[in-house]
Length: 94
Picture: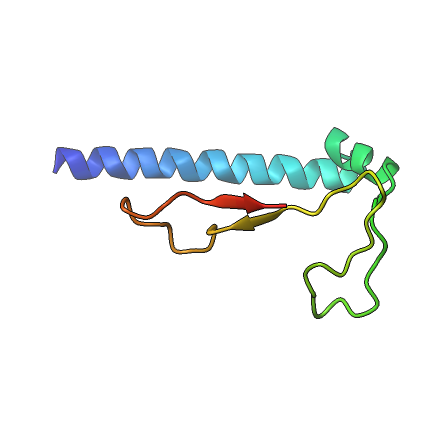
């Protein structure tokens, strides 16, 4: 009985804390205050070192254009599920 009461009190306190945090966030949103991280992300423009693909629904390995100072490296044996203890470790193919 005492354990159930303690669990109920802890759960209630957690619910009150989560509700208060949610309401504080909603009040900041309605007041027009942005979170610092969100405003920083809004200022940074997306930079991509590689060109966008024509067809983004499919990927063909080894078809990206490489600069003269770049090397394509392929990770082998990294698939899921995790390897068994007796299996060899992953390797790299360059």
